[in-house]
Length: 306
Image 1 (cartoon, one colour):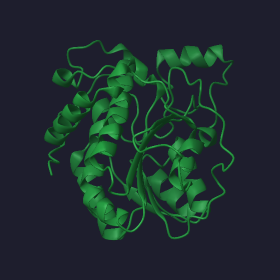
Image 2 (tube, helix red, strand yellow):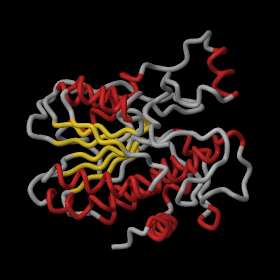
Image 3 (tube, rainbow, N blue to C red):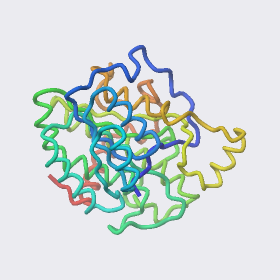
């Protein structure tokens, strides 16, 4: 797992319109941007746009052929990693640190929905690991370097979340949802996306004043291969006469914007619904005690205590 580029949601209303300085108009020469889940979907679209603006892009994906192909096509560097494996994430972090002295943007976009409940080689449910735990581990491993980089100029950490977070519920005693209904993986996915938002806000609190900015966003309802084999998505697609959702390019636009605009106009920790700040969230997203406890639990599970 770990390809989840092109995340979509059960509903994607409220994505908002692109602001005046829309993505694609910035000069990013000299900037290094790491995008996970970048070999397809919105990750691939974002990587293409940011590279065209002059950024040095690190294309991270699980599928070696697709990852290598897109990197070659846009003049970027390919990094292959499977987020079902903490060992892979650690190797990825080492490779990034060895390759880049400076990272300006880390876009944690990898993830996805798992139709059937399954565990990773690390013993965690695949949805929570690929969407939350592995991105958490990667961020933790890169954070000391990012803190150093931020002393010179701002650094951004961006998480691809989802409006579906409103249907999620984080239970720290059952983060893997082993004792909860599966329902085709949708509730696990929504919970993992809620964890992205909760963690983004905790990251913002922990890095306040450091020059690091953390944001999460909902890309809108994007037409892609995401969850295409689930019954819910098949019904929704038929209801839309086979044309469901926006293109990956449209879904990638908020990510490109957050990665490239000089100022977002919103404080670190903000969750955007498309381009609109302060999108609707589960009540748990505003619980600082839960955020701190989730952070500690994630450190223990990933072995990333600092």
